[in-house]
Figure (cartoon, rainbow, N blue to C red):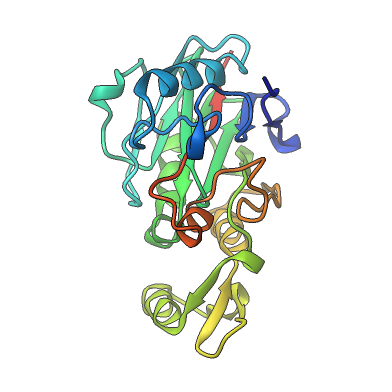
Length: 256
């Protein structure tokens, strides 16, 4: 059995956290092996065991809390575990409850973990292009401030997500993005490999939104989910391979 891939961020060195990869679980086939996606078609028993193993990577964490991610901009404050069947629709969470691990599921979108260690407030956000463009990062920061955090003291790390070199989008995508975003969009787009296409820098966009929101310490880990099937799940790679479904990896953070 392979050991789990665990990545830590220097920016969150004072907070218990982990960006987990694909190895180290019990799922098989296209879900092999640490698939934590409740919404996938994987064996639910395997998913539960994988989620248990993911939680075990954080010493002192007693319960894992995830939400029903919908690519929106809602951030919710949480103070106690919620049963998987009762997950609320949201794309970010905030807590100051020790032992409660906030978990984000991704397979190309950017997982963002945040902490104001001095105030004892943490957050976690699922930031695909729609959520990031719609304001999920600003929402999670505002929610953290309601719990006593100071945005100038918040550190954020951006976990494994699809990189610009792997993320080709169409002219229509660029036009939709430009219509919604207030300001120039050129910094996040490069020429694509085909006419009418562009390469989108999701991680850089997320980092820039965090900095614009007043977060001084932002650490993009620079881990591309698409080209490394042994290490990461990727929705886009699974789509290109015409697989019927795909696994999700887990990023989590907790207060001790």
